[in-house]
Image (cartoon, rainbow, N blue to C red; front, top):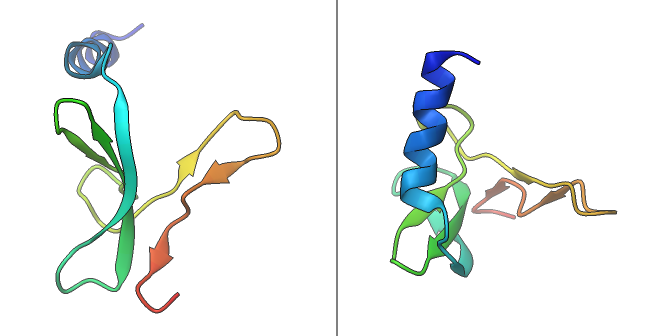
Length: 79
């Protein structure tokens, strides 16, 4: 396992492990045509699904839940 991978996993564990999802919603970004799937945690942290690490567009939550390949797909304000 690479040191960089371990570093980022440990960083995420430190920030997220043990937290509870308290809300799920779409966020609008001013000036953009898409809606961003968003999770809110019990400490008011918001997690946004983005298409890449630069924040270029919304993404989709993919899952291993049976019969649900994805939940909360990327949407556009017109949908």
